[in-house]
Length: 175
Length: 315
Image (cartoon, rainbow over all chains, first blue to last red; front, top):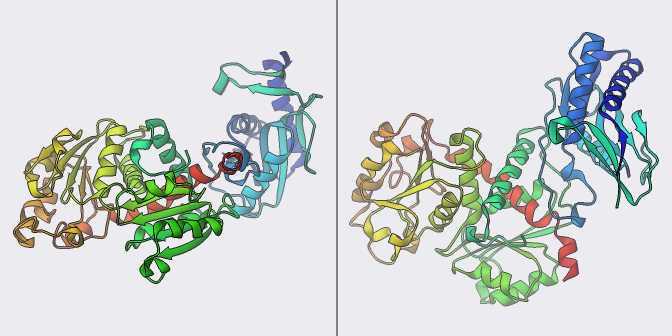
């Protein structure tokens, strides 16, 4: 097990992502941040808080459960559903930034795009990930990345956050 | 979990997880999206050998909201009415590739027979068998009670429920008693002695013959339908007397504690076990039970079917 990102590095990465999102979207009043539960949702809250501070305006934040849209449901025992909460401003015509902790195969994001399509038609959909570990199986890329981590498929990347795990760090484990 | 035959097969954690899943799915039904792709390509057969309105429609709506294909099959108008056996019906369904069979049958234990047999590989969901059990109704009742009375708790600890009426013939009561106990609620039965089953004293319930004495102390009054079609003998002198002693009328409604609710699994005999003005009152959650039924049945189908095929394929 090795630590890939410390608490300080995670905090810097999130601040940088917040700045990048605002730069890439000059009309910041249309941005909505949606996290993918569970850890992506906590990261989304942190990013939205940091963006609200920088832009001096409230950035809407919510979470989007993608379980029912997964393509690997039949390969695992049933997963518990996570909450979905869409801000009152909705997603129609808005610039949606999806937030996930680790970008790996890209299948979660594909499911998230399907889940979004069921709710409405955003103007744009962008993707922020704390860690991009490569090994994509679908034509999907992140717009905002905290850190690119070259890994082998036999390793697993675990993101720990204080909200759930009591500590902020990203570790790589060899299986 | 492969089948849902009886509440007694469920652990408390499994029951709570079905209710939690239903809570999330209820948001789907409330929101703009009424359809999810989760069970696309799965076939669910509604095999109803007994009459039903809301259970069949509810399972059908639940299956369709999860994008499953639904085949409705009722005894009337099918070869069952020509005398086809349950086995041959099951073999037919297996040959057609059913992934789940929702069965209602007049014989207690028919779903169990279907599940234990080698006739088919599909998941079996008990939608009411004879006077045995009706687990999906108990789950939707628990869901409704939790929503109104549990104040955010995951289970039903400390909630007091009165189940009133024809317990003898009621599969809804049997499933509800099991589930309410599992989730920590306390149950009082109120019924004339002729409508209580033999051996009732061993059930984990209080028994009372005095409805007025029980009403003020409970959070939920669950009325049961008087099942005249299953009554071969006289169980009470006449309908007027039954209604007077065990019917929920507007005078009794006034005795209820302030936040308590009135439930009924339907179909109601208005004027017999429940007065029309009570059924339509603000305390009545009877219509809400029906819409909760769809969310709870979606959760049941999700838990039984969404992750299943690998397991079934390994057999």
